[in-house]
Image (cartoon, rainbow, N blue to C red):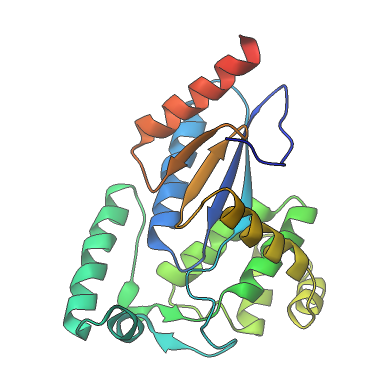
Length: 222
């Protein structure tokens, strides 16, 4: 498969589509990081926007279990049980989920902020902090002050982040990412594209990411 995103001759480039509220995106990101850490060649990771629930009202907060129960047509107890299973999977890769505290919200503003962070070399750091804020810290990732604080935590200028949050900045980038996902057939996240050629869908084992990195690198040297 191919994407219009540039590759590098000196590194494997991984384009990742994910959403802040996607548990398997956080898990998959951790697994990819483990594979990249052990890989002997340089790896560049670029994040692209994808919204699982774009219909949620901007700025509003919802209890995750109640939202899942409503969206999936299940009881709150079933939603809690499902989240407990996901939390156990997260714990197996070193992540600490507290889904009973998670605040579901529209993630578009958070996505716009990640594109701002990318301009300043802080995208990976902000994506990771957003995941942790949502799944571990019970923070409202649709709230302007929370988002500005998170941006500052990873080294971005807080006032500049607020200016992005309060405007429509980087909306085009978000829309482009979502349109490209549709164009290349992405119907769920996480989705990983290695050097524009090789795809991995879902939070696969570390070995799957290692194999994709190896295959992509062999194209460089082959």
